[in-house]
Length: 117
Image 1 (spheres, rainbow, N blue to C red):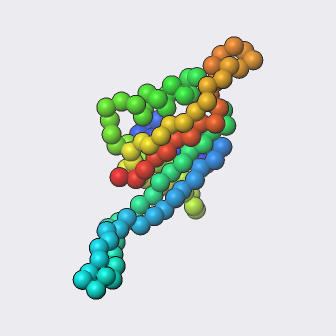
Image 2: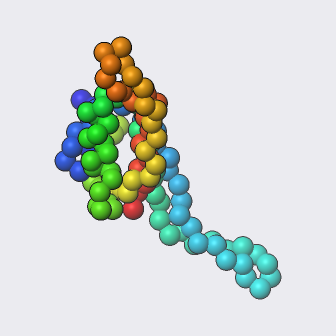
C-alpha cells in the first residue's frame, strides 16, 4: 500500500511524486588546466505534488515544515514494496489559495520540495 510519512505524520497520497537523483561533487583544475572531480555523495531530491488540499491538510504540512526544526525523517514505499528512509530538509512549499463552493479555503497546485541531507 502506497504511503508517505514526514516525521511520524502520514501525508495525504500525492497526485504526483518525483525523485531526482544527483551526484554531489567537488571540482578543481590542475596546473595543466585539466578538470578533476571528486565524488562526495549520491543524493536525492523529492517533489510531492497535490492538485487540491483542504485548509486542514495544508495546515498540517505547514505545522511540520515551518518550525525551528531543520531535518525531518521522510519515509515512503519504494519499488517492490521496500520501505525507503531519508533524512531531508524542507525546500519550497508552493501553493495557490482558493475558495471552494462550500466557502472553505482550499489550496491548489501544492508542491512540497524535500532535499536529502
